[in-house]
Length: 204
Image (cartoon, rainbow, N blue to C red; front, side, top):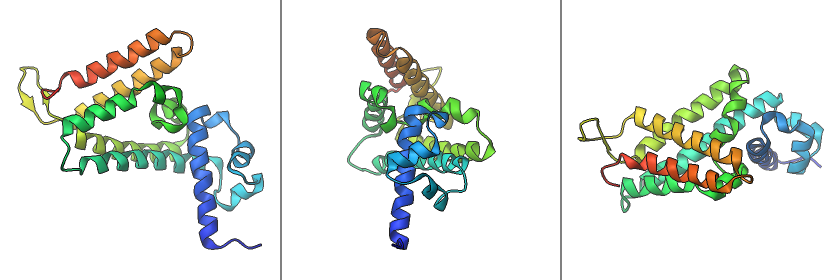
């Protein structure tokens, strides 16, 4: 039975969504094409109807999951009824939650995939970099004012967004590394990073 264009598009998106979850859970090298397609409900051979290679899939997934995260954050910034400080605090608390720690397949891709992407070729790195840029831009939209070295209030900068993202990602990586063996220390890391990231906002 010949697939309609709409069904083919839906099938391709299902593979992308499945890959996004599994890559975050297991890493790029932690799952092969055959197992990935089986998880999505398709045959191994069907993969090449949609993608030229696994590297192409990795690149597309890297950009898509970051773009979705950026769009979600940017949408929150458009809500005129909410203050930046509240949106940002909610975002940070959610990012550093134990739920996100324990469900990497549904959480931010950065803690799960940064090390993998560093070992990939230019196609994957460029796609991920584009997604990261959009994510940083969206994060900056919801970041409240900061305090400079003299304690003066100033607008958040791109450097602030980079530093906050690095702290969030690093904190999650550390917390996951010991989760299940030292829950107290893992939770302590999440709490300490949250306090640090929110601590220099004058609106805290």
